[in-house]
Length: 74
Length: 346
Image 1: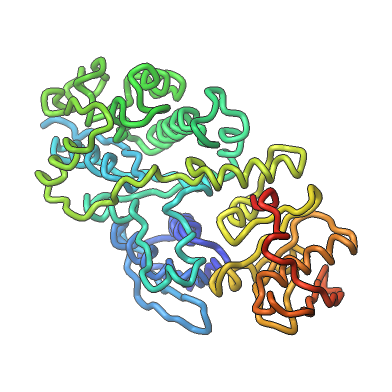
Image 2 (image 1 turned 180 degrees about the vertical axis):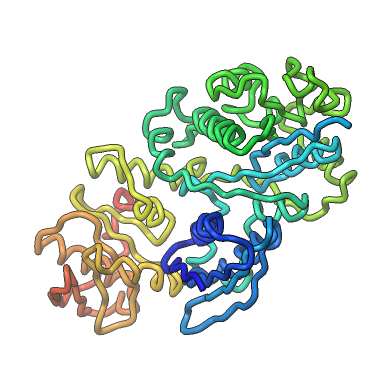
C-alpha cells in the first residue's frame, strides 16, 4: 500500500497529487490518500471514474478523509 | 482504415469547452482533456472553506465535464510557472488583474507541449470570437495561435468557420463543414447545441472561471504587492486573499478577520506563520496579522478584533496576541463602528 499525505491541501491539489503518484504505479497497486479538504470525497472518485481507477474504500476519521484506490489497467 | 487522430482539449468546466470537445468526439476524434490549475481557479478550493457552503458541496466542473464526455482529464499544477504570466503580462491586464490574453497563450502553449509529449495531433479550445473582451476577439485569436507556438494545430470547433483553415481541417482529420460559426456574446447557439447533444446540466456562465477577473480580489492582490514593495506571491498568499475580512489600518500590517466558523477553522492552519489575535473574554473571530507591528499597533489591532467579537459593546475586551508561541495580553476598549475607517477595508 502506497501512502499519500494530502492534508491541508485544497482541491484540486489532492487530485493532482493523486494523479501524479498513480502515474508512477502499475495496475493493481493500491494507494491510500489522506486529506483534510472534504471536497476530495467528490473530486477524487470523479477523477478515478474518468481515468479508469477504482475507489475501494472511503473513510472519514477525525476530520480526515481517506480514500483507498486501486490503480486501473490503462 | 484512416488513423484515428488525437486532440487534447482545454477543459475549463464551462459550456464552451464541453461543447468543443463533444464536437470533436462526434467526428470520431480521440479526445482527452487538460485542465490547468493556476491557484486562482474558481473551480478550486474555496467551497471547502466557508461553513455555509459545506451543506451543498460544489462539484469540480472540469471533472464533471470530462465525465459527461467520457474522456480522460489531466489536471496540471502550473502555480509556479503562472507567476510570470500574472506578474509580467506582455499584453497587459483586463478590467481587473486578469491577464487573459497572456494566460490563454500560456495555456495553449502548455497544451501543445503536453500534446507533443503524449503523441497527440492537435489542440482544441472552446473559444468563440467576440465571447470575451480581451482573449476572444477576432484580432487576438491569431495572436494566441502564433505566440503559443500552436499555430495551425490550434482548432476552435465552435467558431472555426469564421477563421482560416487549420491543419486538422486541411488534412481532413476533421470536417470543416461540421464545425461551427458562432460569434459574439450571445449564448443562444451554445445552448441550442447543448440541447442537441443532450447536455442539460452544465455550468452557467458567471463572469469567468478565475478570481483575477473579480474586482475585490484584484484590489486585495494589488494591496498585497504594494505593502510588500514587490510583485510576488506564494500559494498561501493567494489562498488567504479569498478568506475573511481584510483591513489595513496602517501600511505596515494587515488584519485578516475570520467571518464565520469555517473561515476560523481554515485560518487555524496558519497560526504558526502569522501573529494571531483572539478575544479571550468574549467569543470572537480568529484574526491573522500579516506584517510587522509595534506594541501600539498590536493594541490597535486588538481594538479592531474586539469590534468584531461578541464584546463589541463591552467596556473592555481581553485579547490574546500570539507571536511564535509567545503570548501577550491586552485589555482594550473595542473601536466603535465609525472608528473603523473605510480606507482600512481592502
